[in-house]
Length: 107
Image (cartoon, rainbow, N blue to C red):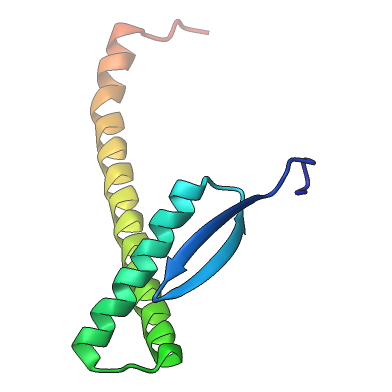
């Protein structure tokens, strides 16, 4: 059982011809989707590199997936920065309009 005393979920998946029982908090369908992504990447790398050593393929797969994750994080960070810049600019444009619509009373 996990910290919330809920039964652990076990997903049975196949990756590159080997079966695994994976304990996860996610649904079996989600874990199966992740496993399929890993399997597909291993097959792709095997075809592209000619490597048949499972350990080497697993490491290449991990590196490729880590690269994809890092690039996705970088794109997200850039988009967040651009969004914040747009929000700052909108705020600059709206401040005079708001100030004119709601003038401060003299103290």
